[in-house]
Amino acid sequence: MATMTLSIPNDLYAVIKHHNEIKWSVIARNAMWEYARRIQLVDRILEKSELTEKDAAEIGKLVKKSIRKQHDIE
Image (cartoon, rainbow, N blue to C red; front, side):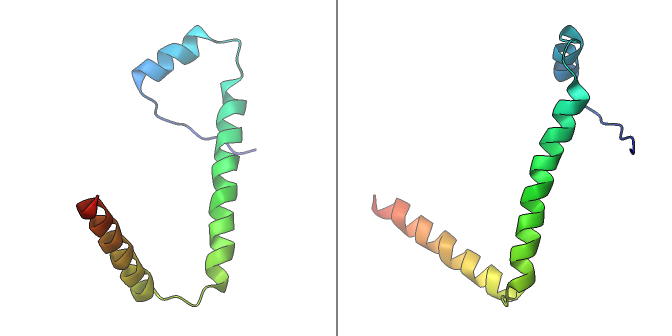
């Protein structure tokens, strides 16, 4: 198994040190797997997509415009 070194904020480190009974590496590994699975799902969806980056940008603009319009009205 590969080894990874992470930088974490001091306040998080204090909590981790205070609770040394917890296997933090298992928690981190599980959280990373959960996120990796989501990324893999998105990758599989995008493999089948025929949208170009230009199409996606245009859809994004339309969504933002719609959201602005909703908030201006309400």
